[in-house]
Image 1 (cartoon, protein in one colour):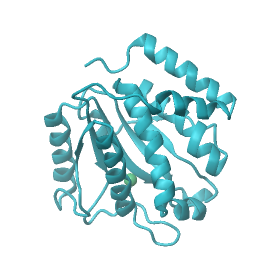
Image 2 (cartoon, protein in one colour):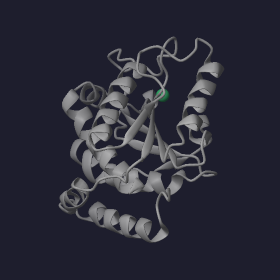
Image 3 (cartoon, helix red, strand yellow):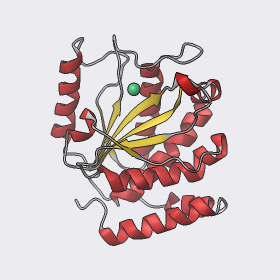
Image 4 (tube, helix red, strand yellow):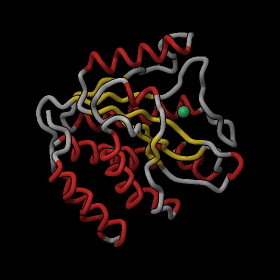
Length: 228
Ligand SMILES: [Zn+2]
């Protein structure tokens, strides 16, 4: 399945850029895609980062990243499933896939390859204790793969919606890097760092179901828009 045609992508990016400049335009984008549906057979892998012995980063008030990653991943999957997307999870419990980190990662890669997905989303939470004021949701991708356009689309939407509403951050840009999970398949693959556990307000927000729902809805709409 063609993921994002050049023309579609340019139109989408143009639409989203407009929303970055005009806050009230954000509602228009939400309305535009609210009634769209993915093509039959669209498959998305959702990877909840860490798990088991590897709890990921720890929040200022002790929240474990791995637990919140799972909550967010399951909620995102629920929303996508309700919209007709076939969702494959790399984990659905607090356990990792193996006690050995390398094996755990290889098993995630195997799930991704076997699923033949249209895109991959790995859910994580950020931490930057050196500057506890840092907030917001940021997207990461591997610039050797096909994730760049998808990451840009996702970041623009998150900036125009949750980042603007909660942390007044509309300037966050997607970051490229060398990430194992985004190299497992040749389809667009991104990591979404859903907030900073080193920031007390972000940690508090991420622990509420209302925020997680709002965030997952925006991610899901972008996924559906992108795979359609
Ligand atoms: Zn993480």
